[in-house]
Image (cartoon, rainbow, N blue to C red; front, side):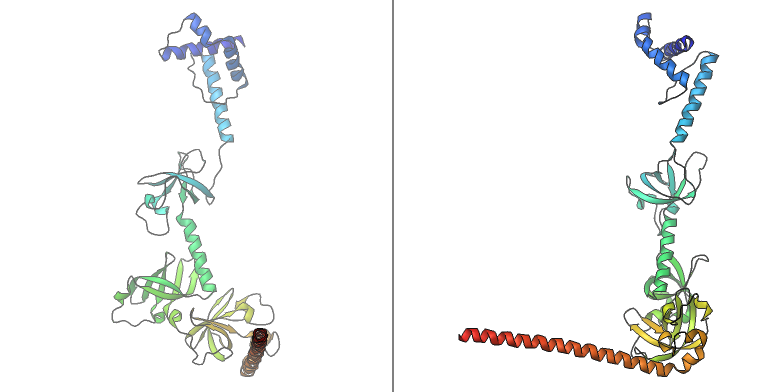
Length: 387
């Protein structure tokens, strides 16, 4: 212990001398009291360091002790470091932007970098145009430690995933959405939806213009034909989005011939007289269906019942379930369903008409009752005035 105290005292004197501080015997005694020396010795003896301290050692023994202290200090730091891996999503605060991108504090041992190319899915001049200094954002780690302890982050990847999810949802709902035409070619139109690039084939362009170059930069309504994130493929139709669902043979309850265009996990898209309708999995049969592709395939011809129509959203909802003579016939004997389709459609329309008539009668009865109450009230008021 005495040796350690002596080493600590020597280290203090050397440091003071290096800093240009003159030390006398009395000043050294005041600077390094016996109690302080014992405290330093105790820390060195237990090898536990709470704060960083740089001590210039002059002997081989004290240098070895200092090296051990630094090793212990590094081990203590590791205990407080966060462990991150590629794919993790973290929240960090942007504290600086430069030509490389945005520098972010995520609690790691070094600042993380979000390059300008990963700052946004939309086009941006630089990271400073996207991020506000001092604000927190969500990032995804896309690259490990670069050797300096710095991780590489991305906001673009998070936004890309969200954009594909929205496109899948709009396809499932058979929604029309506005796109922006980026360029034209002999095959069709290159458009942008949700900051994703998609293609509208020539056969699915409904607009007739003398020069299609005039469409560049214009907003064009489309519906999704194919959404494949894995293949980075978006195929859309302008024709299906602009077809107006009118009363020309497409009334609710009508039975129409159709051709299956595409099969999805949630149902099938059926072309009915040039208009695309959704035959939802729940409307194929009364019996439970595990997979739509087990029942229908692209190119299949079938008869469907118009369940509902939405002219504003250019949507048709279809059903074969309502055409089944017996529950499950669509799975066991679809030919019978199509044979009896017109008859089942007529029965469906009759039920709808009866329900509407009952609703109108009930509404009329309520209105009559309310009118009677008003007449009674007026008569009571007149009697009161005469009295």
